[in-house]
Image (cartoon, rainbow over all chains, first blue to last red; front, side):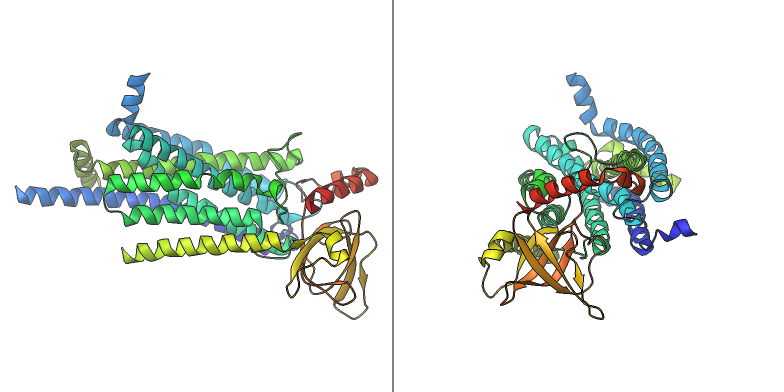
Length: 53
Length: 250
Length: 147
């Protein structure tokens, strides 16, 4: 428990680490979302060109 | 040699290759970051002046380092794209920008949180190190805004590449700002004459974090480049086949 | 499109303002020797930086105000400050103070910021370093920082 307190700097240290890992996870989520969005976009485009033919 | 480059630059080949590298980068980066976080928080001794507050170094320094590395990747890729008209290079540059912006944000935020108890201020307007890092964030945001503003893909690539190259002067300014001007920020600890000025127990977790973050950045960059390549090649048959297959799997 | 244009304009303005702050910051940093000689910006606050002189920190009992001497290793300037000092503030430490001179030639600070050096080590290691060697090093670094 004492280890988690980080002296009197617990709030500062934990906020920094929390923020960092939140951003890293956000980066992964964003990258995956973008990938799925592009694939969706390609499929939509394919359907449009099919109906034209 | 040239056939290797041509093959690498061919979108479907690159797409497959990137997909193979991503799990490896993650498999190297994640354990390094896990060790660095644990050792940095619980094993490294507190600093003689800063006590436990110094542990913020384990996220602040990797973030700051990557904010500059990502910019170098972006600027070099943009330069290659501009000179050799290589579309893949532009895709790399465009993919590096949002990641670099996130790491810059992290460096500024963790630095600010560190500065409050140690220096006595969240932010010092006009401080050289703080100013140059903030301008780095503006460069990333400007780069992304410029790309988003131009509908024509080729024009967006060229214009944003010029901005990326011009902005590259800021990177050495960030590094040397603490030596050139009087800054609240201390001088370099790791890259300096006479070797790192940090005790071994404190250094190893820091190095693990820096390398770990670099590999995670590599994995994230490749993930983004993959999407970027797909979008740019959206009319190609291989992409269409891939999209159809992925629809079946989903 | 409009949103992107606004964003780009925002980025430009922010950069200009930031550079302006940087310029101000550079302009209104005053050497201790100049402050002692009275060569300071009129009608405006400015910053001084230097080392806190050993055994110079004076506190009035029951009052928040603290006074200490700041040195560039040549001249000394008395600084008065009523506020919370940063955790790294201590004698021998490099600090930057923001404020103005009063009629007695003393510096009245509205903000005191502490610098630290680039060395990181456990407390035991720091203790075992010879005391005079540490003092010498700190003095040399503060000399660099003041330049």
